[in-house]
Amino acid sequence: MPIHVEFVSPERIIFTAEAKEIIVRTSDGEIGFMPGHVPFVGVLQVAEARIYDADGSTVHSFAVHRGFVEVANNHCTILSDVAEAAADIDPDRAEIAQRNAEEALAADKEDADAAAALRRAQVRIEVSKKASA
Amino acid sequence: MELIAATRVAKAQTRANQARPYAARITSVIEDLAKGGASASHPLLEAPEKIRKVAYVVIAGDRGLAGPYNSTVIRAAERELMARSAEGIGYSLILIGKKARDYFAFRNYDVDAFYEGITDTPDYESAREVAEYVSDQFIDGDIDQVILIFTEFVSIGTQKLAVRQFLPLESVETIAEVGSGGELTAAFEFEPSADGVLESLLPRYVESRLYSALLDSSASEHANRQRAMKAATDNAEDLITKLGRQLSSARQAAITTEIMEIVGGAEALGGGDDDKNDQVAQILQQTN
Image (cartoon, rainbow over all chains, first blue to last red; front, side, top):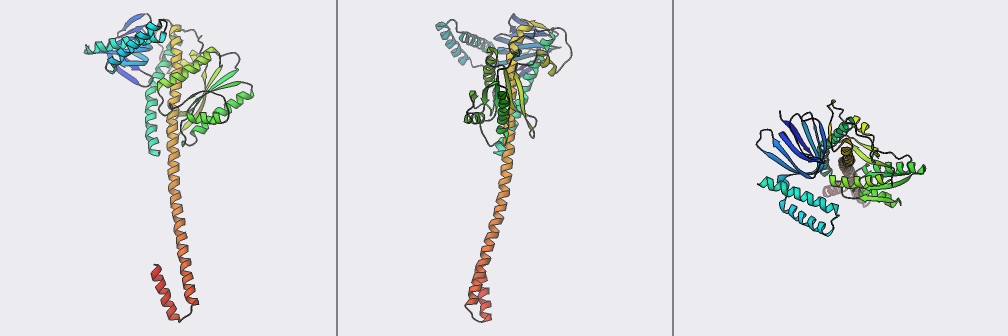
């Protein structure tokens, strides 16, 4: 029995699928959900989220920048105000953002905004590279 | 304009519907947390003992020609504000929409913050901006209560004025009860912890509530504009018919008077009866 997964942004439902496994990163590290997982609520980190389709044919990869994951009754909901599918990411833009963030960090090591921007850019690049590979 | 507004209502409604799952899910997570025994202490939940200053978040439109849409919201806000002021409670105005700003600025109220250009098609980013601004002030203790004044979209035909307490939030349990109420599930695991989740969740909840208020208001504005413009079009058509009739009868009266004058003149000039009749016949022929 597959696990039903929903990617929900404040503006719309981005993506739904029947999945074999879902892997996200919460504050305690990477966690995978398979059908029948115990009820779970976690805070997501800026990281990649991977969804393995029930028939094993495709892996959907998303860059998730913050949000929550809720698992209950074989239902997995990922709430995120910024979640991008690999296909929607512009790698060139992400690389420019990465360079800018690095420069800002070099100038001011305490710059939390720049550190967060850097992390986001890195995740975007990682996700889009995997998708094109 | 009626047709433009009509398509915009449909679009705004779709957006509001698409935004619903997120709000529902957030509520359901809060429900899980309430069951999981998250402690109910968060700055956004704490009601101050004494209310000294209230912030009013007023959501109106940027443009007019929308019937009573703007004035209803603005009047309600002013009424609230006056009532509280009479009790000696200070105010802070956070206005969304140019019409609201124009009204309060013209009457020399202190406008604390003003946002423009987001009510036509509200995006989440602007909702977050406003929510953050309000929450920060509330957490810092600058304001003790936040009241949200907007228009609730019930259906195309009905929109209701809504005056709601926005902050402090109701207790976690109350939010949970309003939610879907779903079946009892086994104990949840929380990462990092129930309180940790709650802490990052509540600000999102606040944003999502403001966002849905913005979407509702936007749909209401377009619906109101559609109705106002339909009334204006119908009224103009009635007016055209009425004025057209008036014009015709005035023209008719003028012609009749003219003929009478000519006939009278011919009679005064004298001449045989036959002559006269011929003349009248001639004149009538010419004028017709």
